[in-house]
Amino acid sequence: MTSKRRPGSTPRQRRRDRLIAQAEAALARLAVAPRDHVALGSLEEAAAGLDGLVDGGEGDTELRERLVDAPRRTHLAWPPGPALPIRTDRLVLRQREPADTADLHAIYSREDVAEYLLAPPLELDEVEEMLAERATAQADGFGLVLEREGRVVGEVALMFRGPTQSELSWVVHPDHGGRGLVTEAVRELIGLGFGHFALHRIYAELDARNTASARLCERLGMRKEAHRLADYWSKGEWTDTLQYAVLASEWS
Ligand SMILES: CC(C)(COP(=O)(O)OP(=O)(O)OC[C@H]1O[C@@H](n2cnc3c(N)ncnc32)[C@H](O)[C@@H]1OP(=O)(O)O)[C@@H](O)C(=O)NCCC(=O)NCCS
Image (cartoon, rainbow, N blue to C red; front, side):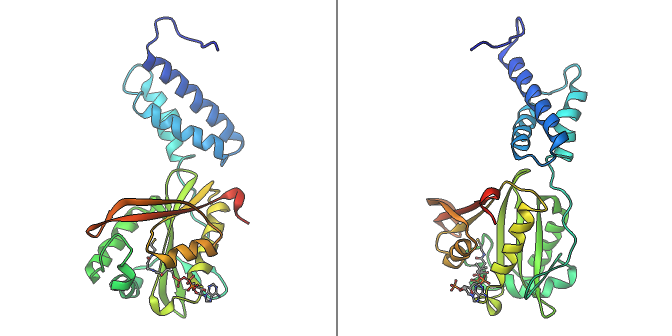
């Protein structure tokens, strides 16, 4: 194998040259196909690598803007969400509103809901704080509340994990569980993930004791990819984690 090497170049310069070429090639491909998964993966890797290598030398300001910052604002950020609300057979899926706080508190304050969530049952002011934090972090994901007969009965979300991957989350008030409402909402959400957001892979991570979530993943047709033993410290103990996933090419 031959490699083109600048005379007297350092390993750092050669790595930088390689990443510049990689980013430029990915951008050229994205100019033709803006959600090309291969180009997005390649661009994400190149921008992350260049982030630490473009550090104030001659021409670096232009290079950083062209190959790191501008791509992150455009290609590597999620597109704006779809038009809402969305109606499914039994639900209205819409954005959360401040008036939903009481309904959400009725969900997140329960011991049985919090059992396998990261946080303990929440007080009203903690729910308000959580909603305020999420409102300022909208670029981190896309969430929908499940409205049924005028009340919010649950929430589902796609959390941003890079330009082409996303992690699912879900919760339902136990009074409305066991009827397939979450399945109905998440099916719609995965459809948006692969359709509107043109994602490549969607996954869920859950406490292995959370059998209702595992059944939900299987009902949705997600593949079990891993059972990690004692990998996560949660509420005073090491817990196992299950990972389920589905690729765009597998979803119908
Ligand atoms: C995980 C959680 C969302 C699952 O809720 P759920 O009510 O089981 O999910 P669905 O609304 O999709 O209902 C599915 C159940 O209804 C039944 N069902 C009844 N009618 C149905 C229908 N029309 N379509 C599909 N399922 C139906 C299913 O058989 C299933 O029951 P089963 O699991 O006992 O077989 C819920 O337990 C929860 O909120 N837990 C607390 C929060 C949490 O742990 N979140 C996940 C963190 S990873």
